[in-house]
Image (cartoon, rainbow, N blue to C red; front, top):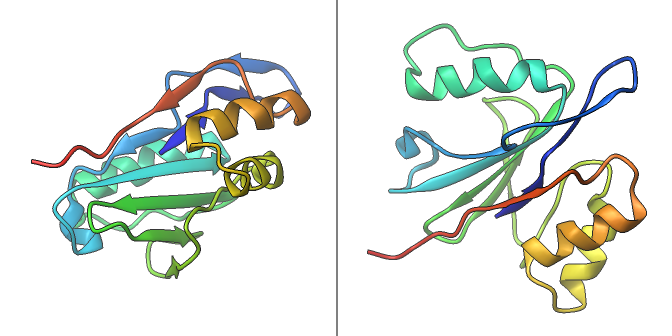
Length: 139
């Protein structure tokens, strides 16, 4: 799973963040041993969701203005805009965010997700400022 590191403030100012993708602390939520979650949209909501994934017994946060993509160690891709309603994607690859169409085209032409995000950043002004890649390693 790969993503850019650009965060855009409501004022339009662009900032470099640490990452938009994380290893999920409780993969049981997604019925797997290991999973990554990637976010796009309103970054104010990323933290509460990650906190809830650490402790799903707490009250579930609202998910406003975001999309999430999960990649599991079973090879499943899940897409959601809430924590209750996940759609399994059966395509070999998928992307979210403002540069998603460019990334999808790059992956359809054989590029890996990391290269696809880099390509998307050349065409989408809201994608860029560095890139992160997490690799699912087998034990």
